[in-house]
Amino acid sequence: MANTNKIPESAYMKSHSEQTFENLSLQKKEEVSFLVPKVAPKIAEAIKRELKGINLKFKRIRMPTGGSTVFEIPTSDPNNPIVAKELIGVILYHHPMNIYWKDKNSNNPVPDCYSIDGEKGIGEPGGKCSTCPYNQFVKGKAKPCKNIRRLYIIIDKPFPYEFNVPPTSINNFIEYIQDVASQGYFSYEIITKVGLRKVTNKEGITYAQAVFSMVKELDEQSKEEMAKLAQSIEQLAQRVAIIDNNEDSEEIEIKDDKDTTNVNIDIEGFEEAPTQNDDDLPF
Image (cartoon, rainbow, N blue to C red):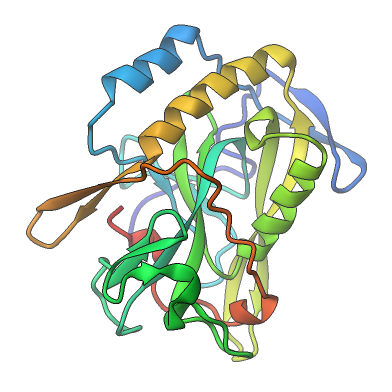
């Protein structure tokens, strides 16, 4: 079992930079310590240029399992992650992903079919996601094809962590990001808090749901810095490496920059806790 640094509050909070923000969703004052990483113009350009063409792997913050309500933030020591009750940072970019295994109990992390834009499936059966029979809801049951949302969030440094929002939490994210957009914000213009809520499904399985809230709008200078960084990260995130058991890789690139938001969401489809751990995906 991995050792962890148990910290009662968010592990990456800067104690020397206390700031008080207003939590807009709760309409009350909340003390949150978060220092927006300073991003010199050269950093965003360096990330864009120097990492081009590289099969990049972002450090992944995993959704807790077994009913746990703490995150483990990866460090340079894989056996010593930082434990945090919540994530507080800036979401630079996010996009839909669909994942399908023929055998729902398979231990193979590579799915039989997947989509990195929520529209076109790659693999078996492949094809158009919107008309695929495995991507349709049956009342009271989870869809065979899982819809997740991948977030790229900066916390303590300019390079983001990757966080997969699972099917059981995706409605929470969609409601949040709709509220953010309705106020005229891009996700990279605000500070977001990701918390965890313990829930139990109809089969009696207890698991954690991710819940999202807006902490504070960034100042104008930070908005400009985050916008440049978000553009660089979006381009990098559009290249995905699929690693199979033989260590070979297939590189896939999204060439279409049109909006791929999946708005066909029904709460009925997310009643069951997922069998596979989406955080074990090799891409």
